[in-house]
Image 1 (cartoon, rainbow, N blue to C red):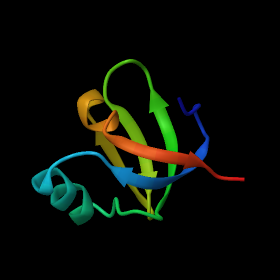
Image 2: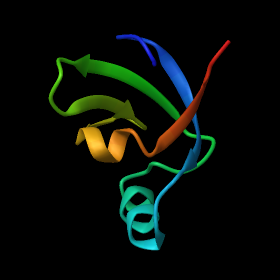
Image 3: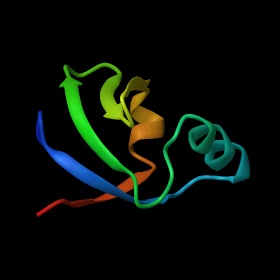
Length: 69
């Protein structure tokens, strides 16, 4: 799990073509840096390319990331 304020790199989206296309249109593509802004048990709020995006828990669990060093 990633921590609040942590910056991570999107590695892979484990979903179908529809989910991959939808997230890609929001700027969520492999290699993109994400920052976890809010994690209160509901939707996960992330910062991506100067935008903030709310992700439902089901979608968030399909996004595989690596920690940025």
